[in-house]
Image (cartoon, rainbow over all chains, first blue to last red; front, side):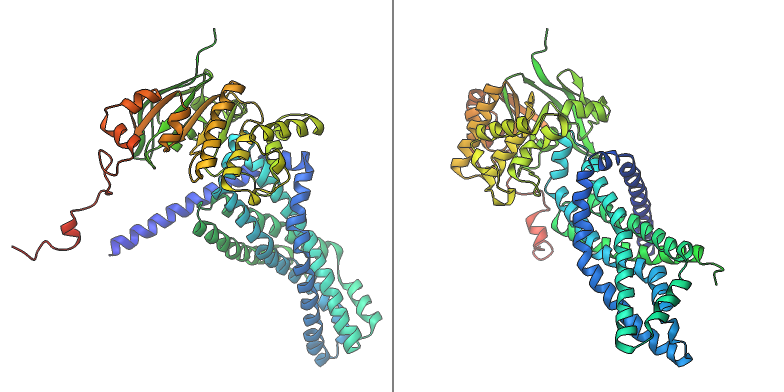
Length: 262
Length: 270
């Protein structure tokens, strides 16, 4: 009984290490074969449409609502201390530093990541990737790399749009609905958001999330067993793993970026 | 002098880990021939095609295509060789996000610098050869199984390969599509000067069109010869296969413990 349990544990560990190794090799191969994604940028643009443009609706609507909630809750708390003039700062900083990249990353994982995994997994299950290989076309270069770069490019743009929409939502609730002074709202925001510390760090975060989510999605699809359960399992794993990766990476990046910041 | 054999396989063995799939396979395909590899499902036929295409490497022995040893080529060499090979997958494996036209044009666009006008003409010629010029603008999802197979065939011959491999080209086709596909394989082989290797378990259709047949059972070649030789063969396995008998050297039952034991009839009597 105990022996069996130890054996299982060992087996799982070995398999886990194998998978990490395989994923690392996959990531390297993807980077090495990225030439095509840039030489024939049309391929990447097509994927930008599928991962980026088609994610716009969910990103914009969620951004708006998150901003509106921030406006309500922020005002609620700030007015207790008589500092409702800081509402603009609160909304902008929380969005640009944290909520924009993180929530956009989570939404991106479930909207675009799952689609990528399912698509690649099904291409594998229906032997399309094999057929491509037999036609002397490398699927990593032709199928995987353009999707990777499309994800890496669209993620920061989506995060920026999310933050922009969120600030607009905060403005709608804070200024138009509750009646915080418009001039104070914007000028407080302008004076307290630092380009280097806040905006650039937020962009760096979203690029890192883009790399992580897209790599996980592509790898899960490429590694999926070529069956219906295989592809559905891989899609689920993509959403779970990449969401956890976004949250964990966010903590690590925040710890490095905003340490000792006032 | 050019070697008459396009594909030569010598002493080939292949297995996953300890599980052996193919052992001691010797097989040749002469230029211009249609060669069939037959055997019951799961006997390693498709594996053999993947070994010829270089998607798998043999554990022992050599596979030579046009004089090049497939297992020893690097990726660039392998891709160079594969441009001269076409492969028809079991269910076509068409790219579902592209139209029929774009599927057939895929290799021309990837591997040549031909202007779009020339690609247009070439693609329509290939589609015409398989009788589907009128379907050029359809998407793969709109095609029947037989049509998808024919589009995949047009795609496989787009770069005018010297070798085309067919993985179960007859599986799941109605009798008309079956005849159409069989005739196409023979006609394209003759008119384009190809060599064809057909993996199949459809005896009747393939005996009509092939020049030479290999029978594989449990990973070894058990019989080989021309279609007539196979029809007349006295070997029990070939006889069972050609005449479609349920029981024979290939048992009806999957290996299992004794029936009585499984039903727990053992301990009761005595």
